[in-house]
Image (tube, rainbow, N blue to C red; front, side):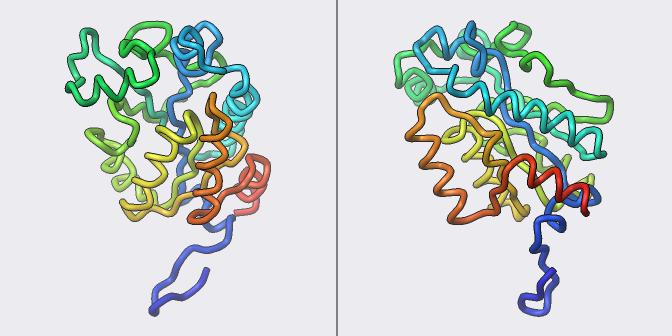
Length: 216
């Protein structure tokens, strides 16, 4: 803890990840984005390079749940026939040649990857844009639960992860990024986002964060 302008500010990693006021935000670890049979892979994305980080994220979430951490699962969705997509958004979704109909609710691609388990008491927040706060009840959930600090992981690093990390910070939450549990099919963009995170936010490995949770 440190004092800034006579106010107490959380500072050390054990303070930031203390289960009494912290939660894990799991971002879009879904089949269409992570599986070799998913939408991204069908359109040529190198999802194989994501697999180690996805596996680590799944393991991290399971261990965090065992340690009593509250977990919020963000789940990207696209409604059939683009019913939540403006022309501008359709242009964005198809900018790299893929079709816009990924993560349609109820489909296999929309579901979380095998091994990623939502417990009783966890939350699932559906979202239609990269930023997990836009058009969702995420902020309301966090504030009603007294959560001040977020531990963020998932896919893709430069897309929904970076968008949600930025938004969390701008909504006045402490943010901690799990450096080895965020993933992207594009190495250069992944590394660029990690450099951005390191310049602005606490960023630590899964093992470091789990050790800090145990020490809190």
